[in-house]
Image (cartoon, rainbow, N blue to C red; front, side, top):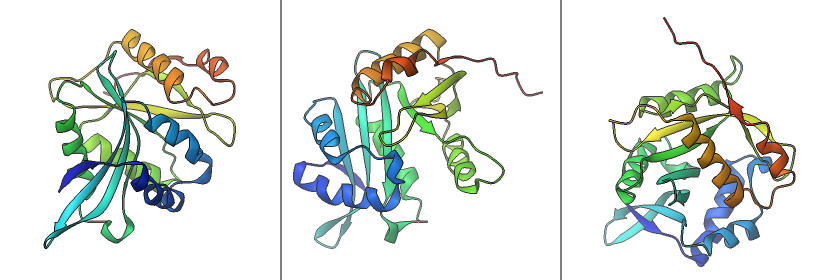
Length: 204
């Protein structure tokens, strides 16, 4: 497998798949993505596998690189449905880290796990197995089609030496992401005021 940067023509097929795999309320408008793609720090990566003499798309990732803080935001990651269950998501994360050798890691906005939400619990378990850790922050993710949703913010380090992030660094990165990724969302500045550190007691 290898990663290839998508162009404007590729994004049509990517967005069509996103509409199938992600809830409508989580998706920005196609025009918003195209605006972000005009930035040099917003990347759409296609995961490809060789099939004989040709290459086929098996997944994609949408990533914003916060060059100021040397951190990335993994906005969306998906494996195309015919290739689910083959471990391709894990391979994609490894390739992503290799693409950004100067980057500390990437932020992940994850739905809060509840006993009834098996999919959310599996998603969190997947990322924590890869080394992601929860950040001590009350976090709200702006939504394009409904009020903001409180989510858990995780960080997936690209080096095993990194096991924690200073709170001030996290807050600074969140403010930068709000200004860039969520600039067109309603009441963004108001939502920022509700993001604050929380105390999580250590497990015995």
